[in-house]
Amino acid sequence: MKLSILMPVYNEEERIADALKQALAVDYPCEIELVIVDDGSRDGTGEILGRADDSRVRVITHPRNAGKGAAIKTAVDNAEGEYMVILDADLEYDPQDIPKLLAPVLDGRATVVYGNRTFGSHSAYSFWYVMGNKAVTTAANVLFNSYIGDLETCFKLLPVALYRSLDVRSRGFGMEAEVTGKLLRRRIRPYEVPISYRARGREEGKKITWKDGVEALWILGRERTRRREHANRR
Image 1 (cartoon, rainbow, N blue to C red):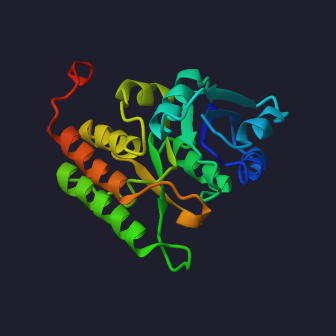
Image 2: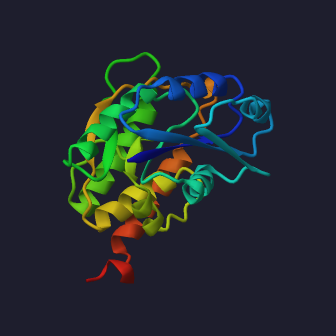
Image 3: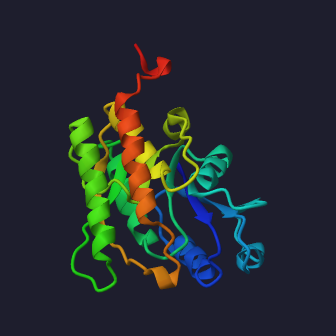
């Protein structure tokens, strides 16, 4: 199996070099590629990416910022692996956890795997950020009669073909809710594994806001009431 690690990047010149180093240093149990989409960065991110010297790395550049969902769509369109996982460049997630996500797939226990942040005691967490995440996740569980622990997690591992079939339209952070809503509507329940997480604050470049939470709730409601795609009918 080949895994495509998809990394959307926007104005991360302070972290992108470390993000690349960490992602490529992991002892993966399968072949990987790292597909990076520079989503219109206006700082030195592009110059740093231009110096990347590893055959596993491919860099694609958007001429202007289009949003996380749009960056992931570009990465998925160019992915060559059978499976994909999203890895943000902000160093909040540890790529050393990716083999843990792969394990249930490689041993046949799961097809879709989510990394579940436990939101334990940590001084970097924002109370409202955690409560917002829990509210969106609870809404998904109520709407779809499921019991997932972390809808907004970046670590979503699934087949590339499955992701493409979801036809995700959200261009921003709403893609997280759209992916989960469409999976749950197809009665695909993600297998969850615990992961580590280091939250960064607004002053460090945290981009998601309360408006993204409201959008996520709207998207979940839309997906719950939408008719099933023709392709998913038997």
